[in-house]
Image (cartoon, rainbow, N blue to C red; front, side, top):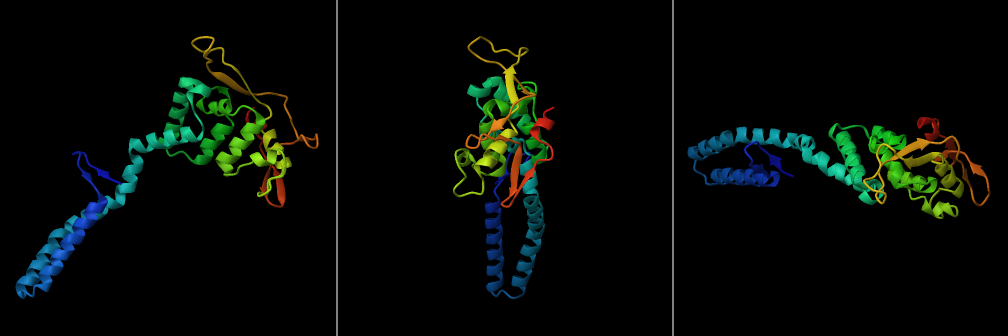
Length: 249
């Protein structure tokens, strides 16, 4: 970590700590030299001379984390990091899609937006993927199962892929849980954005994300249509109060 000043110089905290330790050693040597009154005078002068410096350095070092968080490079780095985490790339959402997606992420990080707000914007996004950047979330993962797996891994820290074919052997997720999670995304659809076509027929442009009136997920083993639900504890499966179907309307 570094502290940057308007003059362009850089102060390394480790170097500052080493310099202060060296000064303290010098003061200690002066006291050990047994120079009588001169020793005490020299020691006092040294201590009083460096006290303002120590105080000033302490203030600067204590404010260093805040200074670093306020620097533009902080938002630049984390916008790029989250773009990678969300699998933003030009093959799936085109160059313009990656630019608007990253710009949207950057603005939230720069404004220190709560993560719950960012996730809500992602999961409830609709409209043009260029005009409404979080809608690109539904261009990268496009079907209910892929969206369920992606959302669970990104925001729950859970890999649900194993429960697609059978109850998870090591986790509490069942096959019913997997398809109930997928049901949240059953009515999320994509279509071409006629106002933002690609530059040529071979290069797609933006897409419009919308919520269809129809769309269900069926559990393949039982043939049962699964309602949108998510397991909230090992012993309880609870309905989500507001499903994505409602939020997308």
